[in-house]
Amino acid sequence: MKVLHAAAEVYPLVKTGGLADVLGALPEALIGAGADVRLVLPGLPAILAGVEQQQVVHEIGAVFGAGRVTLRLGRMAHNGVPAYVIDAPYLYQRPGNPYLALDGGEWADNLQRFGLLGWVAAHLAAGELDPGWTPDVLHAHDWHAAMACAYAACHPATRAATVYTIHNLAYQGLFDEDDFHLLGLSSRMMVPVGLEFHGQLSFMKAGLKYAHRITTVSPTYAHEIATEAFGCGLDGVIRARGTDVSGILNGVDGAVWNPASDPLIAAPYSADMLDGKALCKAALQCELGLAVDAGAPVFAVVSRLTSQKGLDLLLDALPALLNFPAAGGPQLAVQGNGDPALEAAFTAAAAAHPGRVAVRLVYDEALAHRIMAGADAMLVPSRFEPCGLTQLYALRYGTLPVVRHVGGLADTVVGASEASVLADRATGFMFGPATPAALAQALLQAVSAYGQPALWRRLMLRGMAQNFSWTAAATQYMALYRETQQAIQAAGKL
Image (cartoon, rainbow, N blue to C red; front, side, top):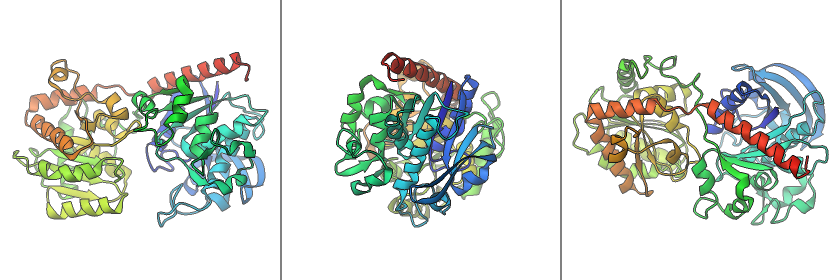
């Protein structure tokens, strides 16, 4: 089975969030499951530089406002997965991240930039740009690639089944409806039952309306987005798709996130030999300017600093944590950037509590590994969380997650209730309502458990024993691909 993945970012070349981690690991796992997999990516500077052995496949010419567009085929350096690169210097050769300029504003031509990504993916699926390789399945990821599903749906030569994965429904790719003509699609698609969304053009709806099947990155999130509370205004569209929508949990790339072989941490360790974790903790405390104290539980955040991630709740709950009468006194390490107000508030907290609160307003992959290894507990108090990878990495590193019972967090962490501890199922700490009081209660439960070394070790070992592998996810995706092909063949649409 030939599978083409269309996405805007991929680890380790371009990463703004978990989407990149998925594209960096899932294709390789699918290859291991027997698929013939390729990627199609925008020619951002890091991607052009990082994809090896590139050869020109097709000279596309002038499209989407770009004077020259060339399709190249090479291989990802870290895993050898074949990747098409859309070389369009006018659209992609610029500083900033894939979506934003250096000043934090969206690129004014994002419609054309990501319209082109979808157009190329769909024309590859139709066998027009590389006749030597035509996919059986076109798998588009998030709004950036969603337009591929619309282009494929209206292309008479397309025989590929289309799958669309929602990594975060809150980011929908909304544009001025007057710019719809730039996509070159029929005006019949710019209606409420098509791509129109409250007077705007929605790329997200291209995936929701025109893909044969829709997945999200956890089973619970798949159910949540069909409700008004989590549907971001699109719950009706999602409910209308019924059983076409399902959830498949993300996995962990064991080659990247493994404390026994991680070259980025102070000392290796494993469930069988935990001594190295204490060394990682001391090294982290020293690096961040926290008091070097083995008895002080270190809580950590590795996240975008946004209200979605519940970090305003953490700020309000922080006094309860820091004032807890425990030996050594709990500590907090925060890494990430985002909302300027949250950045300022965490910076102020660090200034007010030297030696106990440390903040680094950057995303640094190596530091993220050191925090994951050196912290005792990882905080993920999200208001909503499609899957969440941070808690999966934390479990693997014996760093107990403190999470809200929502989305993929609810699917991957078992809260330390009396019953779950007795049954040896508990892997972390969980709270329900999105309130500072509920979070504070979970934090204090964690501090109390840390004061019971035998219990804490038991929770660590249970967490480290969890198996969230990409192999399991790939098996489910392969089954979905086959099922989708069979369903549309039976309906006479292939």
